[in-house]
Image (cartoon, rainbow, N blue to C red; front, top):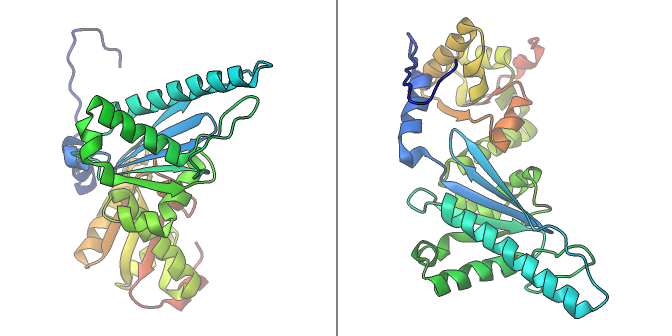
Length: 292
C-alpha cells in the first residue's frame, strides 16, 4: 500500500478473535507498554532494551575508540572526554525512553563492578558503578526528578557482555528475578524456567510440540500452556484459528496461558521448541510414544 502525505487510511478485518483483541487492547493501554528496561554495557558499547509484553525495543550506543598519544596524560584526558560523552548519550537515552509511570525497574548490567575504569590503548572498560554514579550525580546536578525520585528502582547486575545474548543471563539471575518478579518479562522467564525444570526433574509432567500438547489437553492435563505469538500470525487462517480456539479451551479448562512475544529472548527460546509447550497437572508417560 502506498500512502501520500495528507492521506488518511483505515485498516480492519472481518473476524476479531480473542487473542487479536487482547493484543489490540494491550497496544492501546499505556500500562501494557514496556515495564522493564535493561542497560547492557561493556567496553565502549551499551544496549538499551525496553521490554513489554508484546514487544522488545532496542537502542545501541558506541563509545568509539581513543587513540593514545605518547603522553599518557593526554591519553587519559582524551579517554575521559570520550567516556563522559558516551555516558551523556546513554543518559539522554534514559531520559527519552524511560517513563517511570510505566517502567517498574531499570536493570544496569555489565561485566565489571569496580569504580575505576581500566584504560587501554584503544578503549575504556565501562564499569557498572561508574555509570550508576554518573547517572545519580547528574540527576542531582540537573534536578532530574524522575531519576532522583526513582533511584531505588535502579538495579545493578552482572552480565558477560553488552550484547543481546546476555539478556537472558541477566533476567535469570535470582537476585534480579526477585526484584523484577512483577514485570511481564519476568513472568515469561519464570514460566519457561519452570517448564525446563519440570522437563528435567519429572519428564512425564512436561511436553512440547503441537501433537503432544494437544493430546495432553484432550486428557485435561494442561496446568500451564506456553505458546509464542508467532503461531497466531501464521499465513494459514485455519492454523491461526486452531491455536486461538486451543488457547481459549485451555483457559476454559482452568489452565494458565502465557503468550510469549517472539521479540523477547524467552520467546525466541520457546520458538526453538516448536513454539508450544506445557506443564502438566499429572504425569502422562505415554506421550513419549506418540510421534511428534
